[in-house]
Length: 185
Image 1 (cartoon, helix red, strand yellow):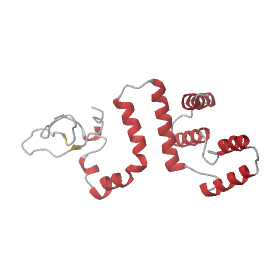
Image 2 (tube, helix red, strand yellow):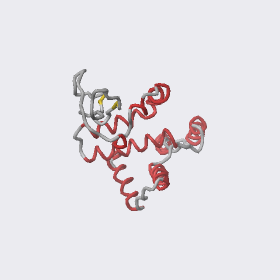
Image 3 (cartoon, one colour):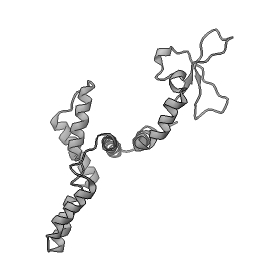
Image 4 (cartoon, helix red, strand yellow):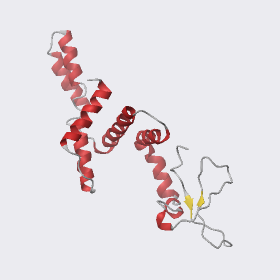
């Protein structure tokens, strides 16, 4: 099932058992009393029961912070649970990357109100309605970081964590492909 990667386990075992058993607390495809038994070493588990049992730490933080990452979680769940085209897969990943960057690393040259006032000052000086619409359209997202800047920032973060930076050519192809698939130009 799509959520089979979200497995919570307990390291609690019955005293009469000769071998320690991992009990799966959450299994979306199993019935209420279903137990999947498996011999595993503690170090193989990403999380054990003690890691997630602190209600004040883990679950409350997840609940209060989930809205910040909801879009990303849903995008990645979609990719894991459905067969989508390569184009859709690519744009979903890039959109998730932009969403993460926007929430945690976004920086604007000025506040949205200041930027709106500045755009209004500029467009108020243009007499022709067609030219005014053209300039207004070009300036609409001028206060937002471009995909190129976001990608450069994300690559720099990756390099700090030991991930090789993609070549400039690959970055240009990523941006060009995303723009073509999103905007058709």
